[in-house]
Amino acid sequence: MRDRNDVERAQWQLWAVAFVMICGLAGALIFVATGTAPTSRVTFLPSSALLAIALGGLVTAFTMYAIDRERHLHRLAERLLREQVDAEQMGTRLKYLHELTRERDTNAALLDGSADGIAVIDKDFEIIRFNRSMQKLCALAGTDALGKRAEEVFRFATADGSPLEGAMHPIRVAATDGIARAGVELRLLVGEDKERWVSGTFSPIHDAEGTSAILISLRDIAEQKEQERMHRDFVSMAAHELRNPLTAIKGFTRTLMLKADMLSDERRYEYLSMVNEQSNRLAHLVEDLMRVSRIDAGRVTIEPRALDVAETLAGLLEQFRTKWSAREIVVTRPESLSPAFADPHKLEEILINLIDNAVKYSEAGSRVEVSIAADGAEVKVSVRDHGEGIPAEEIPNLFQKFARIASPSTSEIPGTGLGLYIVKGFVLAHGGRVWVDSSPGDGSTFSFTLPVASARETAHAV
Ligand SMILES: Nc1ncnc2c1ncn2[C@@H]1O[C@H](COP(=O)(O)OP(=O)(O)OP(=O)(O)O)[C@@H](O)[C@H]1O
Ligand SMILES: [Mg+2]
Image 1 (tube, helix red, strand yellow):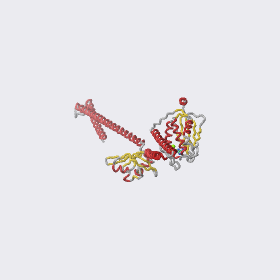
Image 2 (cartoon, rainbow, N blue to C red):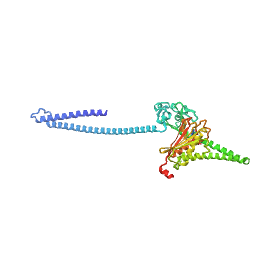
Image 3 (cartoon, protein in one colour):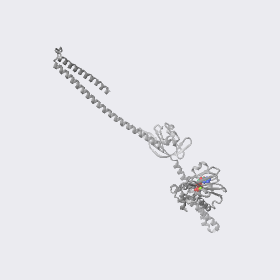
Image 4 (spheres, rainbow, N blue to C red):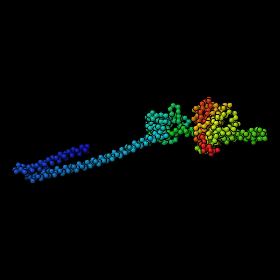
């Protein structure tokens, strides 16, 4: 609007200047004409006055023109200044926009990259953000969750299984009292019949009108819960395993103390042997627990040297002849076997555990086969039994602490479920591998590898 007025005024001024200039020029022409003509007919004004008028008109016209140009230049300068300010403001806005976009992208990346499930619920309890981890946790695609009612997606239950619905729902609770809660352990129901242990944080976001949104963060704590379960199992298992030999020791020693005179020498010897056996069992359990604690802490120390695995095995078969006498243990080995680079005591522990298991978990009279073979840069040892075998679904857990298969035929067999955990810890400490092949009804084969000793290590051992 202001520009249009300027243009109109400039046009008007141009016409005025043109008019004054034409008048001035006309006056000058008349003066020239009257001055040169011998007999002038224009006698109403003296020629000097005419010249003054014409010159005055011209000077006025030029002055007006100059003033107009000056104003025009001034306006131009003002406009340029305005445009410069506009450009600067635009630049600042663009920078601000750029920063906002960057911040939004960073937030989105943070939200999506977070290992915890994160969701945002608006004040109408509809889901407006649902990050990737939350999609995994709830087994629900983002497109299916966004816009849905939060209580439909987040179905929680307490530790004892009671559903948290209506006013009890943690999101409703946070919206009502506006207080943030962190580390709430809950069961999250997933799909129709699955559930997950989660630790939830519910943070209401406030604005001038009250709670405008609720931020939910869920962490999968299945592993922590499993650890807790294992610790509980351990305490009850250890207590059970410790109590049995202690009860026996207590009983025998008490009898020996009270009735020593009445017992024959053989009976006394028998009772003392029982006390000895049960003490060994206790000592063995305590040893196992100490080994487990070293494995857990990553403090397994091995003192490896070049050794013949077949020789170590032969020594053990001799040592445990009585214990394993009811079994035929067949050893297969190649004629020339590369020495392994291993800690002799740890290797003995590995072999004792695997042969013990093969004997324990197969029928009396069935054979146990141990084969030793050189396999490239490794020595491979396999212990095969002809027992019941292991169901495929149990295999992934088998090498974990306290893992025992709850089958009617094996639950009566004593054990703490630590043997295979120790075997794995010791084999891995040597840089080897351990695994099992088994199919129910066809027995099991537990195998492990150890590194072959180099020529230098072998020479050093001799
Ligand atoms: N050869 C096998 N055949 C069938 N099941 C086996 C065999 N070896 C191990 N298992 C199963 O794996 C479980 C774990 O074995 P592991 O040696 O770790 O513990 P354990 O024998 O129960 O106790 P221990 O600590 O005294 O060795 C056993 O309880 C058993 O159910
Ligand atoms: Mg065992």
